[in-house]
Image (cartoon, rainbow, N blue to C red; front, side, top):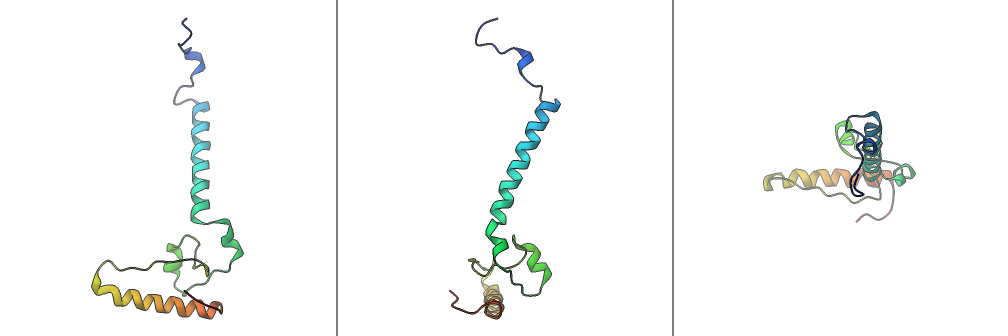
Length: 104
């Protein structure tokens, strides 16, 4: 057999248990990395605050608002800019009840 030819015995078939375990572990590693990006480790160090609306909290990666995070609120249509501004004011009021200090 030539040197640059790979023996079929050394290649795991794509549906073998050996191949699947590598793929499964790789997928779990990727999922763990995504979870770490979506919910960083310092999330547990800060107390989350909420507007009291469970539907909003479920949409946030941390399950609530982080006091020291930067959020962007925008509207799809110009006519909805007032609603977005009202939401921001409500969010700031909830934050100021949660902690005292400066807010950017």
